[in-house]
Length: 445
Image 1 (cartoon, rainbow, N blue to C red):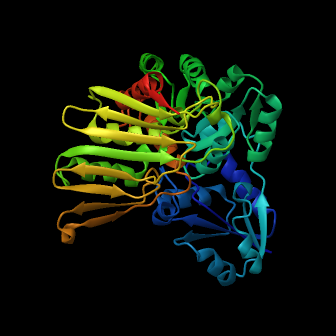
Image 2 (image 1 turned 90 degrees about the horizontal axis):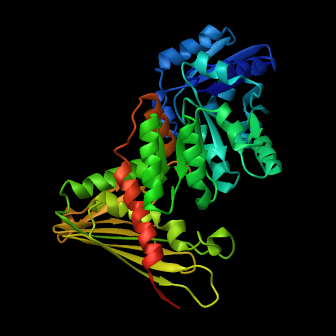
């Protein structure tokens, strides 16, 4: 029986070895495909640290492969199944269902994710795989686990949420090594945490983790106050811990390029930024409690665009919010941010739907990013003379969480406390505007 499997095999560790061992047990001849750098890039794999030759050598040194081939392009697997007369295609269960189409050519076997591999083994044998724990077990936490498989050098190992049964179910479903009964127990197992719990809990979890020397990637908004956000960054700096607000758009290639195009003078001097983010919500936490409403839920994204394009030296913030009779929270808001030489507007809605576009107006032209602009794949620089218009295209892979995680891991590995993609001052400014918008809004109903 001829068996084939594929992988990047970057920072080869015990988990890789066990996967190859189990694949080899399925037959008597094991073919291992190692992905090229270009193919990894095309499929959204980030942070690959070793060269192709080093990764091939990793597999050779394991002594488990009877033959090693190179995977260079999407669709190659179909040809390989036939070219190498493959009987069984084996792959990790985190890809469950992804390769069912290959059943037309051979038997597809999904191998359960290796559990029980010690974190010490992962770190020592791989040269530095970062162990990550998750706080929260909701939808975005599940998406984070799926996205993490695209970031080399990262292993999501554990989960904590206040409901232990829910944590156990999440760990089982996502094939994590631990479901922790206490937050303190989680911190003992990991190098870093991703906080995906309700907004009001972010500050306490982040502070406790930083004090324990654990790096923190915290979902947006990190906090709903300027003071708390500032305190967390100051504490992280004093403890030499990396703290990043998880605003995925900030780290996406297309958004970064859009900001650069606008700020280098392509459209002249930027005088206005208008950004909209709305979604219709009919039930859930967004509609209830002190932390609900469209501003706390969505404003981070348009405010990110505004501070990246116009800076943090705003002079006034004015907000107008719609909160119908009987509603606990505002459902639509417009936040106007005034600068000395520019005006910006952020519009958010969870009960009102609008076109989710971004328009950056300059003295020579403007940048237009169509909806959903926060998943920036395409934008245009437009001018009075349309012959000068230019279109830009970029990839935005998956849910985009891989971009923030890749930057977070890079910062930890390189002992870099701040990323130019989202500076501390920008994160604090966003918290300040959100706090002022929520507390000083003119309400209409």
